[in-house]
Image (tube, rainbow, N blue to C red; front, side, top):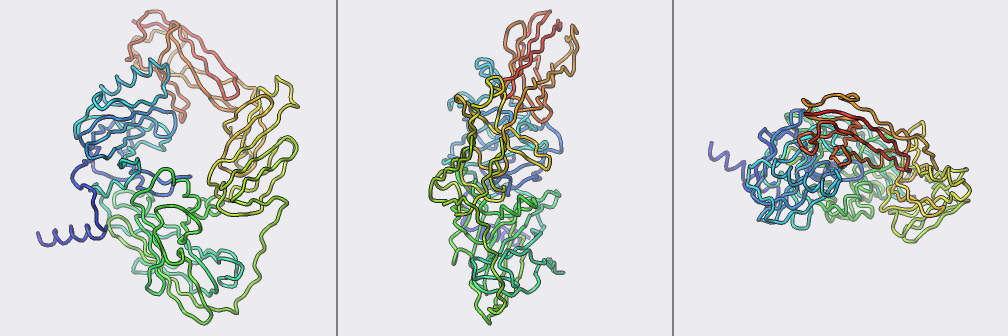
Amino acid sequence: MRLILIILLLSSFFSHGQNNYPQDYFSNPLEIPTILAGSFAELRSNHFHSGLDIKTKQRVGLRVKAAADGFVSRIKVSHYGYGKALYITHPNGYTTVYAHLQKFAPDIEAYVKKKQYEKESYEIELFPNAGDLKVLKDSLVAYSGNTGGSGGPHLHFEIRDKAERPINPMLFGMYVTDTTKPFVNSIYAYPIGDDSYINQSNTKLKLRLIPLKNGEYTVENIEAYGTIGFGIETNDRQDLAANKNGVYGIETFVNGNKNFEIDFKQFSFSETKHINRLIDYEVYKKEKNRVQKLFNDNNPLSLLKPSINNGYISIQDSTSSIYKIKISDFHDNVSWVTISIEGKENSVSTPVPPKKTPYFINASQTVNLKEGHVAVDFYQDTFYDDFYIDFEVNSDTLKLHEDIIPVKKSFTISYDVGAYSDRDKSKLYIARLVGYKNYPLYSYTRRKGDMLTTNTKTLGTYALASDTLKPTINPLNFKEAQWLSKFRYLKLKIDDEGSGISNYRATVNGKWILMEYDYKTKTLTHDFNDAVIKETKNNLKLIVTDNVGNNSTFETVFYRK
């Protein structure tokens, strides 16, 4: 039995290469078994997931422990993103991150609230000195929650190196039960260039995937000629959860020779935007499926390893080739896809010519487009490729191509609103029209004189929108002149139907009070345990402002002993 255990340990070690990460240094940050709702580097909207999402039994308030000795080096509280997040730096140079927290441990909570009241702001970012908030391994640092952009209760946990690059925490010995192979949802084939084709087509094809009895996959045999590539939609699933998580690595082989590899061990935040180049962005936007391209088409991602011919395959006439895809999870459960390719030059089809418009984007140059009172500025290297772009202005509506092309960095849209009256222009903002009803989604709008500008990374349809409606404010758990002596919380709901909430400010008897905003429930909450409300009769005043400056004021009286 002991010999078998040694063999398994050695097998795990060598299967992940020379794993130089400490294996016993970090402990489980929760007091329950690790079951994942999300894995490291899995594909998310516009980014790779930078940690592990650990399930918390569908509830909040579980104790979160320091994974190792260290000190709290950063605290960030925000309405969106990570919500309440804690960063702990350890003597070995790594930093662990704990996000979407309900609240911090008492000493850290007191430290944060003191700073929030000093700044008179719920949102805050702090960088304590090394001696301010020291922690010991397995000591309480927070309670799990559902704050920020979390889609449900869980703990987001990260390990970062000295350069702030996130690393797969499972490389440090975190254990997750997993005996399940990755599964494959779809395979795509891509002719590269006008002289290439697959099954008599010069455009990408979704191949018919055939699951085999042994758990592997194949597709119907294909005929091809020229330079081609493939894409795969794949996920992994652990034993104790139904979540579709990301895989650990993908390799491809042509006639037994390795020609492409992507692994998900580590990345930097500066490169995570290139996820939209890794996936077939058009398929994602139209079908909501993330198909990873198994070739490197000018993508600087470090996750892509050096490969032969960038993962492309050259198919000659009268040849037979076997293309294999190996998909692995962290525990070396492996799935294979086998594709047989027959080379046939006589299967020529007429290439589909690109749609041409009067506006051509040279990706290596700055391009300025203008029509009437609307202008768009694309800067050098905004896009990965050259292409013809759709650009049309109809009154206050800008049609800027279809959102099927990945964008590297922000471009600028400008509207000259000088033709509007001063009263009207003060209520205008730039919106992206989304959904089949063209709902106006606020795009952060700057104002300078008669110019409105917004920066965005998304093509699509934009328009000027007007917001003349004030935000709404409604008390949730109290009424006018009510005694609240036995209440722990004061709660109100705020909402805005137009441009959205920009900021809010609450005072009691003229003194600022801390109110936590949950944008998912549109709720403001004050905790009476802050002990800043000491009077019997209390005058509450809440001012809420939207993104174009409309504001509403709510005033009431309540009593406490």
